Image: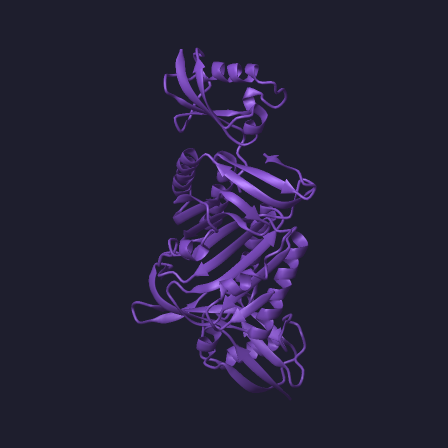
Amino acid sequence: MFELSEQAIDIAGLRHRLQDPRAGGFVSFEGWVRDHNQGKTVIALAYEAYPALARREGAKIIDEAKQRFDILHAVCVHRVGQLAIGDMAVWVGVSAAHRDAAFAACRYILDEVKSRVPIWKNESWSDGQSGWVE
Amino acid sequence: MFELSEQAIDIAGLRHRLQDPRAGGFVSFEGWVRDHNQGKTVIALAYEAYPALARREGAKIIDEAKQRFDILHAVCVHRVGQLAIGDMAVWVGVSAAHRDAAFAACRYILDEVKSRVPIWKNESWSDGQSGWVE
Amino acid sequence: MKTITVELFGRLKDQLGFVQRRYQTESATVADLWQEIVSQSAVNGKLEQHSIRPAVNDEFARWDQPVSEGDRIAFLPPSAGG
Amino acid sequence: MKTITVELFGRLKDQLGFVQRRYQTESATVADLWQEIVSQSAVNGKLEQHSIRPAVNDEFARWDQPVSEGDRIAFLPPSAGG
């Protein structure tokens, strides 16, 4: 499952989609908005997506992960809209019988989402400027 | 921080120890009690620890991870006592400026805790038997 | 003459000065259309085709895809999610 | 003759039939003590020293560590956390 969310990502609600009596390991990644990037002080940022394409590409990545790794469930949610420092920008959760597959699949999904899903980041900096960061 | 817990692991309470405005990535691992192991159907299990040694060895592993990887915070909690299928046996959380270090440190802590911290697992199986699993 | 809709994302909106626009075009392919848009703009710099990815009607597309009447054609800078 | 306390964990409790016991011993080292305990037990099988790790007074110890009056000496099978 891949989703875009305009609201804060609800981890508790997502975790239960990954629970499974066959699961022995669960790995999750959270991307948080940090207060600095490329030497600048970040005060806020906004993510913009191309929603139809982003959802389709995200779903494709989840499917790929399920084919490549011996996992049970995988979920990724990406925020869009305005975010503050410390807010969660992306969440990836993977459950599997064994931890190796869970770690590998979580990493795969994260890396592919970052490079392939059409989402863009606009940072606001402490100098009053803002700009698109690629 | 490394802890042993006789109660269910409280993720929400632990997560705030890892939050940091400098953090861009947070990786967590949860070990769940699964319903099968080594070909047997598991109905419950109990973890026993050597508490003084386990706490000291666990704290040492957390320190090692902070030296080896460029991370901000790391926490590991291991359950002891009786657990049911689906219960969380261990939780590892790591925050870092960048995701590579967070993934690597989370994996390191998990692997080292499993092999070095003196904790033992007694499984109860569907055939009415139980035994120590190493 | 075909009537199409062009959509821009990320920095391309700032560089080319619009988000969505209806175009009358005789461009045969997506690549031709991109060159037409760039040549009409005042912007120089990072508008090299190799850094941009086109999409047609909500699907990633090839640069040599033909432009058809009614298409929604989007130009996407490199993704920066996470 | 020294008085010490021996503690067992995991499968060793089942194999040797106790959890904690006070011992009177003349064993000089931790390894000697382990051999003494095993030789007094009826159990054969997986009691090979190489699979066991000793601890003395809540610290991991070496097999050649001397046994001192009042020591708490623990024998640990391989860890199985997580």
